[in-house]
Length: 252
Ligand SMILES: NC(=O)c1ccc[n+]([C@@H]2O[C@H](COP(=O)([O-])OP(=O)(O)OC[C@H]3O[C@@H](n4cnc5c(N)ncnc54)[C@H](OP(=O)(O)O)[C@@H]3O)[C@@H](O)[C@H]2O)c1
Image (cartoon, rainbow, N blue to C red; front, side, top):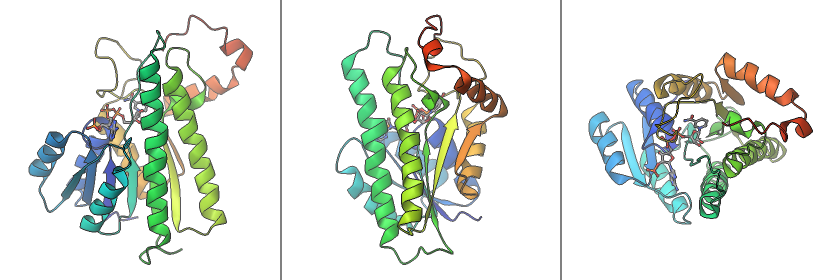
């Protein structure tokens, strides 16, 4: 499917930013958002105002939906919206503030943006059963189960995945012209990772962006990249909960 216009929320770094660069290089018009305005401006100036519009947006703030409306008004009805915003750290001391901020961003922030976009699609005549919008969220393979080193991160990723299942069913029940995508990366070299640590099966943000853009283009329901992570998740799911909870040597 040809993408003409896409919104990327969480475009200032990492996977979101690499997706913006790839889309723009293919001639797609991209509406970008995030909190760090200097990075949004830098992207717009480097790629060009004909390809990039931006709004400063904090998804944990209620004003985020106004910023999204303005962005859509500027770029036109998008073919797809990618929710790439997210935070998450290992939290071995169970710092409460960090846990709560993770929930606010990954759960409440996602629900705010995703629901607002679906409600926009419902009332917009540009979409119908022959021309469906697509909404995708970058979740994680970390949502496969609870991870003791990162309780809020793993649980919020699990919530995102469950929410997307609900929305996919909801869209069908309510005949909303939208498809739903769940994009689950493994380790990708971005600012979210600890630069002092080494990560197995690490992928570049550019390579991850290839998978993401394909999933947007083909309205993929679930994308796990790459095959090694598909295998890993398959094995992971086979571990009984009682055994998993005893695996205290697991440090992610
Ligand atoms: N890298 C990995 O290994 C990996 C693996 C699996 C899943 N993921 C997921 O991929 C997604 C993207 O992460 P990344 O790896 O690309 O990390 P990243 O480079 O840190 O990018 C995170 C993005 O989220 C935005 N963001 C954070 N808080 C926000 C807020 N309150 N409002 C609006 N935007 C906010 C950031 O923009 P501002 O700071 O400018 O707001 C930034 O653009 C996340 O959901 C992450 O959980 C990453």
